[in-house]
Amino acid sequence: MDEQELGFKAGDVIQVLEASHKDWWWGRSADREAWFPASFVRLRVNQEELSEGASGSPGEEPAEDAGRGRHKHPESKRQMRTNVIQEIMDTERVYIKHLRDICEGYIRQCRKHTAMFTVAQLATIFGNIEDIYKFQRKFLKDLEKQYNKEEPHLSEIGSCFLQHQEGFAIYSEYCNNHPGACAELAGLMKQGRYRHFFEACRLLQQMIDIAIDGFLLTPVQKICKYPLQLAELLKYTTQEHSDYSNIKAAYEAMKNVACLINERKRKLESIDKIARWQVSIVGWEGQDILERSSELIHSGELTRVTRQGKSQQRTFFLFDHQLVACKKDLLRRDVLYYRGRTDMDAVELVDLEDGRDGARTLGVRNAFKLVSRTGDEAHLFCAKKPEDKVRWLQACRDERRRVQEDRAMGMEISENQKKLAMLNAQKAGHGKSKGYGGGCPSAPPLQSLRPVHQRHVTVPASLPQQQVFALAEPKRKPSLFWHTFNKLTPFRK
Image (cartoon, rainbow, N blue to C red):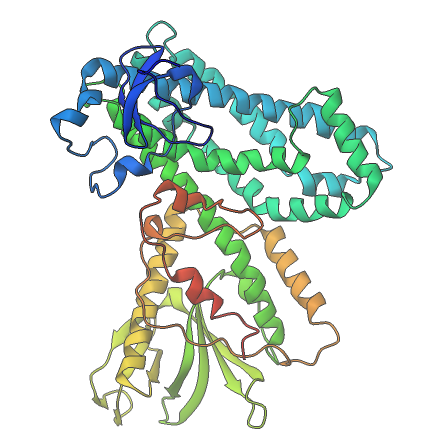
């Protein structure tokens, strides 16, 4: 190569300083600046290096000195927007091909071999990927309509994402199902005939040399990538561009989609633990906890004071929509007996100052009430310490906010998923005495739950580096919420 050319190897990251020329770009790598062929590299979707130390939002570039500011030239910015648009279009077309290969190359052949696969197995392995394929074909068709082939930088694709943002929620079911799909597939792959079958399917469909589990991971990777691509597109879209407002709105919309998927994933993981907790409670009465609740928010000991002035030491578990009271066994403190519940939707939280409670004419300390919205009924609770009371007051406020956020986001767990969680919990507890291994979840440390759009919840370890929402905003500090919930596991004694 010439002296003016920049040498690099696979995996190197080059900072682009000048991109106005179609075929040759000027860039920096290893403290050297020179020309390099644009066709030899791929534009990074997530420009972490450029955002290092910058506090601006997407679309705002960090200030640079004159020597490094050549890429701000209008022609260069148009070229960079062209590159990002083409990257989005190219990856979308490749993605559609992968989905078609899965549906036609794998699913169709599997259905022909009923002796090897049951309907349930295929549903577990492939989930709703056929529905995703159908949705993505329509999405790509609309993208192609908005794509300007002659002048790609003038393309207006933001409206496509806004138009289909609700449809992307279909990925939630697939992401939730994926760990089970991996487990089912791993079991089959232990047998030679299944390994040979899937490899034959791949060769027959003339698919690239990637194992089936790699293909099945692509939808999970794809939904992670949309917010990053839109953030990069917004960065190179001027505010005067006709598509600026739509791209900005699309970026926020796709972040919310990723957040919703994460929340649903976390809910499904939590209901399994809650179901196991309920099975461990002795003398449970009434409807299952999962009929109304899907998350344990706080737990700990409180003294409940009756209207007659009688004190009752109880262990309380605050879920969304309800507060459950339990009594510890006198001899075996890890055994809990059911002692009723309070409907949180039907009461209001009232903070009480230390002193006499008018309704009961007795002195109280570290107390608060849950007062009925419709009648005169009131539940009086006393904490052991002032800091315990503060935790409970904050937890009750968090519970109300979580309920409102879940309603706003349409967060619901299906009846089948609830029934399956209870069934699995009952099977796991079959043959064990009530209370054994159930334990009492420990109270979480005081923390105010962040709004949903700020929470960072990770997909399970079976999907390495697939942090759906964390990927959307990689520079933010992860929330401690999942760590807190792990401390609430019902099997912790």
